[in-house]
Image (cartoon, rainbow, N blue to C red; front, side, top):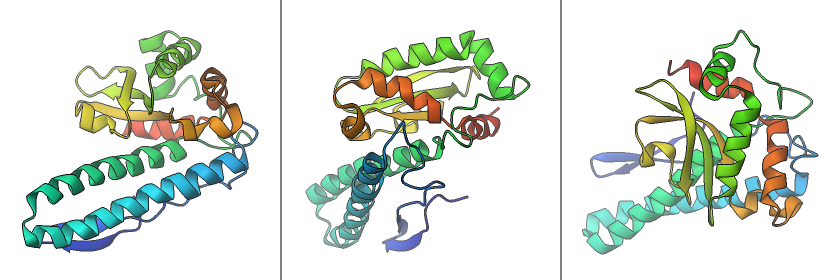
Length: 220
């Protein structure tokens, strides 16, 4: 289903939809002790909300700008829409693939599941995959995302980096995002300061593999 409540916003022959902040399936303190209530509140209610607000403002202004045929401004607004819209997509995937450790968080999929078999086939073990993803995600310079992805052609999983708020599909349409790891500083600094490696080690304790399994199942 749609992760956002949508309000149709007409633009000429097109229709863009305004976004609202998607509801979390856990409380702000639900990811403790891995991610503190203070951090999740800042990340979700401030940063993610800001991306939603900026996206909505940009599509609203685009509506007016298109009628004026102001091409330079239209191009500027398209950039803002891409950045903030991409951030909304990425953050929604991130929140969805986390869960409290008292619930689904950190619970590896059953050995009989398609996801478990896929990871074992492609990586040899979950530990090997996690070690690789942590190293490559930690190597990202500046802001960006680390992803576990599925290749549509080979049907194999692999790792992918995306800079800033670029989405997986925008960078490579042949890849399907399965698991998102936010490596923007605002995703970890409150709790882990500049020690990215500790954040990356801890995040797996709250990964919701059920969500990853669902994403995989819809593409194999």
